Length: 158
Length: 260
Image (cartoon, rainbow over all chains, first blue to last red; front, side):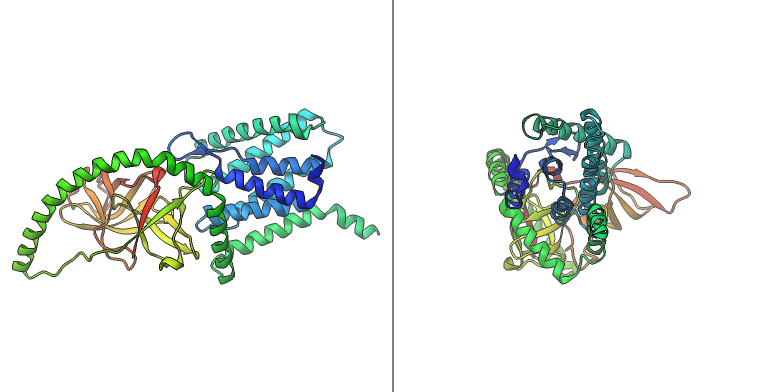
């Protein structure tokens, strides 16, 4: 994982993550609500622990922009803002790296994931707030679980 | 030195401010020509990146769809022979009344839906036809059963974006009922929608089909889009509240036709 500090390697991995993400199946919860494994968000979170850099905000912005162009009809810019803002908030972990313990960091990441998915579902679905809340919470749990697995094998947060 | 240290400390804030401004610019200038080119490029890249999922989805869907289509085909053959008789009868009656043809023959261009789960939305779908196939903005899109799916809103070289009938901003002029009353369809939630402007006195019954009225430059007349589910007539209102359910299955769209 030390390779993640190299820019060329990050670019390559970003493309791979995008490719895998585009082809992953999703789970339909009810009606049209779908839950998917957000590898892109996990990758961006992992990057934060390897590279404390503002460049991750730009990377998140580009991922969000792609999502905006493909998904949105007339709210272009919302998802790119959401993604970059999520990474901006996640970067605060590095600021409190020595102060926060592992549990606090996990709780913080989970909260940010939840906010991210809530904003995401809020912008693309026209539904009751309660069902958006439920779907976002479920998706945050699933993504966070995947992040914990990634942490155990690759990231290893202290 | 102190200044540079401070600058370094605020890099994250500068980056988020810059990306927020960029997001705002994109939000307000998304119809700009330059941005349209970017969209076209993204559509094409997206099509290439989601090829494996298209492949496995097609593989899974083809067998099931083939069975269903064979059944449909037999039913349609039977219905078609019946309709041919009706057409002859209708022509004769029209000639007697001196009416002109209301329905033009439509040219249909088949297209595949390019969908990946991560980028799925109830607002839009990407299809694999573009300017090279003579696709242009505002062409209507129908499914394999002839039901309205939406309209083309952005066109790339090889791919286009379709605004779905379920999108909040979608609206189409429709006709419904025996008296052919004109109204406006707008989606509400998932596969449901409402018809606005249907006068209370007009007789509409459950399961009545809703068709495009043709009072539009975009949609030709007589394309079915929904079925009446509920009608509520309130004393203090001029129009009745008509609830409809969509005929097209947005969740299972694989092939569509662009009406040219």
